[in-house]
Length: 355
Image (cartoon, rainbow, N blue to C red; front, side, top):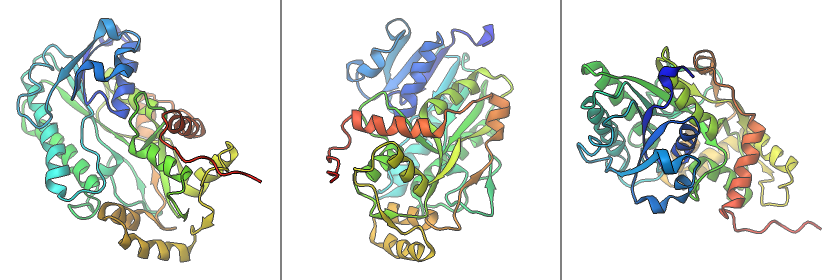
């Protein structure tokens, strides 16, 4: 780390979140001062207040993401702002008001506050692969150059909210004379150990495999990345002067069949893992029909992602070459995620008895 990028003051919005908590931890470990925006008071977040360096270099600030000027004070004297806060809900009644408006307006509120602070030189935005695509394709290799143009308020509305929020950020930068630049981090399926007790949506997928929520193996696949690597990518983007634009953050693509097989290797075969194999052409048709029996968010996701012809292929070379990120092995990430959901008691079902 260059002397210029040592001991910086960094604001992390939504600091209690899955990715953000690791970001706070790594920033403190590197000697930075962190201003954390949270919904409650510090005593609600012992997993943050007890981090090494927190007593000396971590402060908590309450800020309403949807209130104009709410971030004016907290970003003052900050060198970098890491904007991670955004709603993550798959099934909603009103996609516009519950997902898109909060994501877009929250992002713009943070950027507008940063524009008033002469100290801020860079904003690192937590975006998502959802802003790149909402449907895998075996015929397409996705990269930072791609934008998701298929999602809307009815089709994968969460994905749509990520598209609109990131686009709003880039539009703001282009339309205003800002004293800072913008870097977007676009991770895929983020799993791994959680510093706090909440269950994040990606670890929940693995938890649900263990507890029998999935009735069968399906033609599903994910580009998996460790939460610790996603946090590291944010910091590398902060510390790399030449960093520019968007960075797709994902390690390896794993099928559901491969994930379940590895779970059995780890010794979790006595949990309620799916056994019926519908990862077949006939199974694809069955799952497509069943998708219409699911809540709207789950249903549209299934139709966009289940199928032999929907294999996610991505080019992650930009982050490797420009940021120098070195990914944690996928097996280690899956193992850590499973141990995490058990440790936090997110799975209460007892393992099946083996005769």
